Image 1 (spheres, rainbow, N blue to C red):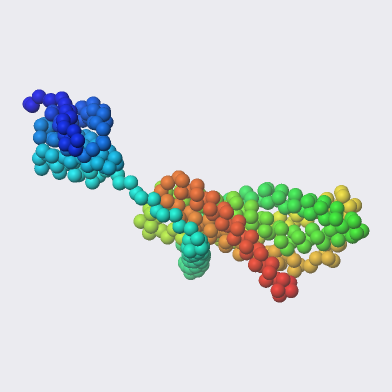
Image 2 (cartoon, one colour):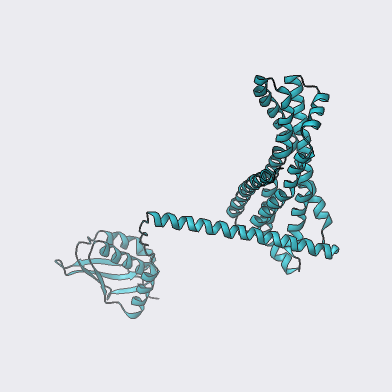
Length: 376
């Protein structure tokens, strides 16, 4: 076995003829000492690195030489390696190719062209997202039609479970929210209408606001917050654990198993939750009107029947299935976009909630404009 030789660095010559000579083994155990010795050599002129006396040589030695070359190059000088055999020269080239290369920063782009580019990319991404949601809507309708043709494929137990999760467990928070909204409307409305002696019209204010807009809208926003996130988290975690791939391997359709029961449960339960919200909103408004204005329950009921017809209730209820479809499709789509990491799951869950709430509000605004144009 060859005895290991400690490397010794000698520096000879000057004035452009600087030569660095290493005598010994350039291997890992001696890399630190040799690195410190090379740092003491000033990179203020061109130099040569003589490896003719080097014994054993490994990648740590190649890394030291390449690093020295880079230091000389950064100072505007050249460090040439001489005396290396083919094996050492090949190893040095391999290490030099593997060294990280600094990327030149992209030039800053300013002006109207950059802004137009960013705007165009954002619009394109929005259109692609909208098309993806439409595709998921079509997928849901296709699988729902398939389940009607083949009832054995429909998962009734899953539907009942999701109806409980989406609807029954949301009743307390929806009821409390609607009750407080009715109280606030009655209190604020009475404060304004009292100035004109028209306190009795607070009943019309409560009825139209709750039945036509606020009841179903705020219910949909609450359901979007708790259900869209739940859909995304459950489907996304299944995708992270590769359970959806396992479904496909077993011949199960993820859309039939995961999407149809969830979205259908929303379609069934959101109108019911909207009706509960309407009742609680009217109850809260009637209670506050009785306390604040002295409008008895009988008078409140009479004014409610005379001043607001069933049309306001129908306008609110027509929105419920549309809101349910929006919330369910957004939640399921976001769950399927989750990647194999927890950070992606959290990001998509947050995006699903924000997107669902925003889409519900936009849809409500479009409904309002539509009903106003047709005079309902």
